[in-house]
Image 1: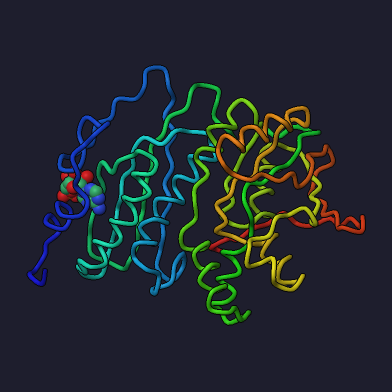
Image 2: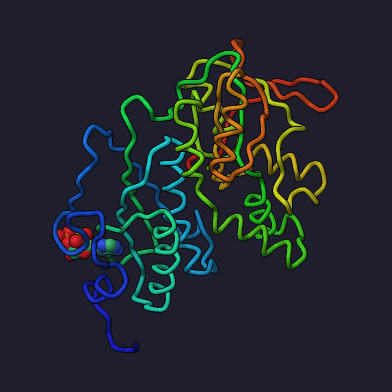
Length: 320
Ligand code: ADP
Ligand code: MG
């Protein structure tokens, strides 16, 4: 495939597939989807910029996976069922090998969730990828950031910090053995969106957010939206497999200020602890209670020895 490939050829070869659920997909001015009657649409968009959200050396299939995964993670955090997505991509030149691998990684995840690509835009420019997802949720069932209540248990899914650890390794701040680096890098480049957990938590969780900018910062969003405070038991935070073997200072950094974890942080009434564990079993995901919602504003870290300290609940800010 060395002949010149134009925009429309590229779309036809790699991004157009026969529609399944959609009424009209790639190829017209709009895509058409029939929402389930009575359901609300859940919409989200997330952009990945080379040099900011990913390194140039990322395998294209993982980039395709991640571009969709971070968006599905937003739907998961709302307890919405994914339906379809749009892909807008700017790239400096047509590299068909790149596009083919990118599409393969993206479609593998799309197929795993039974959703389809229904449209988008393709243009020349610096490598920028934007995916927009469309999902649905029954009225009143969406998990939001503003529902945490005093006394709720604070939960997190999965394990935290391996993605941040991979970033520290890429920056030369920590040395990881080859196999450990590959494993941490997989956490960074191929996160698994917790869609099944988000769906299972409807009617149980009082609030939820997905962890993209670090635990403290994302928790801060929930506390601010819900107008409550919290205390976090630092020793209960579940470190990623590779992070668990690092020194305490590195563990603390990556657990509290990670980023790119794409796990769900959520709250539920303490009386529903068993329901939460049941939802996690249904979804096949581990969940860990990590703290409690309190009336006193602010965020307190409780250490293993019982010491408490007030911290700023601030996460990563691209413009800071
Ligand atoms: P228009 O000029 O009407 O916006 P385009 O020429 O940009 O249409 O795109 C042609 C068709 O291809 C549209 O249906 C659009 O949704 C689809 N499309 C373009 N780029 C992508 C992409 N990266 N992934 C999926 N569909 C795409
Ligand atoms: Mg267009």
